[in-house]
Amino acid sequence: MRRIVTVLFISFFMIGCNQDEQKLIGSWVIEKIAIGDEPNSLGRLGFNMITFNKEGDCDLPLLDLTDSEKGKWILERNKQDKFLTIKAFKSIFARKYQVYFYPDPERRLNCMKLKSDIVVIYCTKFLSPYEG
Image (cartoon, rainbow, N blue to C red; front, side):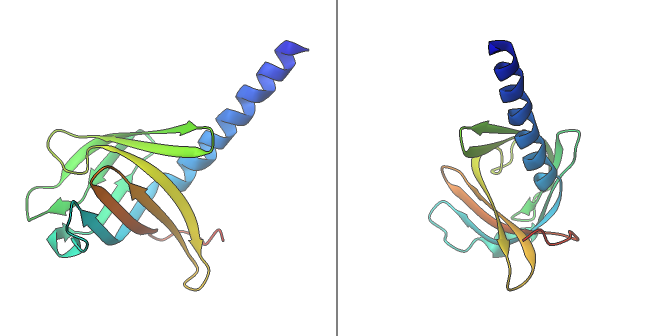
């Protein structure tokens, strides 16, 4: 009996992670970004898109006309909270974020908020069917 409960718990946990990863995978348009004490840093982006692929790689946006950078990502869960860790060589975007997925029913868009120690990003999913 105990073994069955353990297997079921692990199965539900893996399904939850896979659903969150499926939500994350794809291209996201950054609509609003705050870096440090700059509440509106969108003008600093040379390219306002971030892309996560299923192999764990990501394309990070341009900042202050520097070269874009590729990174690695991993999505983890802690009870009900979701955390996205982005690893990259020199990007300000390389850090750990708390992730919030939410619908925007008025615009019929899938949205995501990423919040770290000094970066907060609001974005919408590019070319994705609305899941509201």
